[in-house]
Image (cartoon, rainbow, N blue to C red; front, top):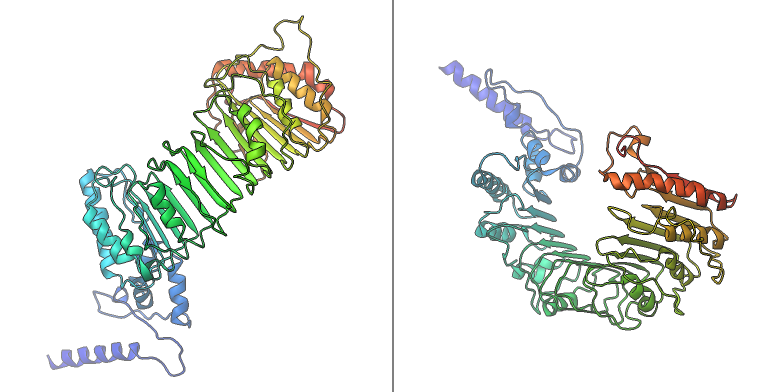
Length: 520
């Protein structure tokens, strides 16, 4: 017995000696419980590279949450770092959970247990990122969510993402804005909230906030104005599905340059007085704009679901509303009248992208009238026309042979136009006429691409490919038999009416149906 006591004392002495710093050493040599041999109770010798502890902490902070937790089991340096880990990413995948394994109640219990355990062992210091994705847990307890936010939102937090959209019990969860008051919100730069109520009050000042994203959030226009007026560093604002906003008032924030508004169904008016917004993306019912309201916008992308003849309204109104736009993307689902000739000009427009969908598209619409849009853009360099249709409704160029091809002799030359792309090119007579007109009027044209199937993807170099043209196993999206047959008619139209009119200095690229996916 005495011999065993002496052996135990010697082992304890060696353990204490191993934990003491060596002379001239910058860092300590560490041993963890994982290094202990349970059977022989022997120690494995292990030494970490000679680095300052703050460097180890930085390395640890770069690891994904699950890996950071694992290495904390084998190093005391990482264990201390784990208790101050800056990035808390609570997502099903990062926590090693299966989204559809077992019963819903068991999955939620497992998720709650892991998050509670991590936050319980976290010191609360140094948290910079909090990402809580609750899409897979509709029965999460709001009290647990309140506790998580309270434990994680501290003065040094920089990013908050909360996703609880479509959650059965917390879809109207009221985000506790009081947690962001004072010191807690001073460093916040990114706020992304999904599927809950967000009710900011006058006292909330997020002076460091750079990006604000609200998706399906219950917030009124006045509440949003209250928040924006005190967010002096804000650069990007994104609103999606915020159905309580009727009038969106954007204060003249000096750094706010990007505004994205998507599917806010009650929105009727947007006011942007003296704003510096240069990029504006909009999807939804067309709101009211005043003359010059978008005067500083250079990149404009609009899709209006409630407006018939959107192209007609765009060419007649937008030159006055957004006179300095340089890139314009328009999506129309209902063109019943032709695009008119106008006196107003897009004097700075260099890039024009128009998409026409046949959802409520009139077969009487004249594609050739789009030349009026080109006439209104004297410095246009790139023109893209995309046609989405399940069947070709227009009169084919192979229809009545007695109808001659129309000429647009009265139109001016398009001296700056260099690149033209038509996706979903078909045998519609007016579309063939538009193509011939561009070939005749665009004196600086370098390349024209005619894609007979509006179903494509681009590779890393930006070149459009069919899946049959590469070794990629990815397949093209399915297309109906009628449009595959129409694509072959379009190829015949190109060969018969267009190829002979292409100047020698212009490259013509014709994209045929995929030989693997688009067979009849």
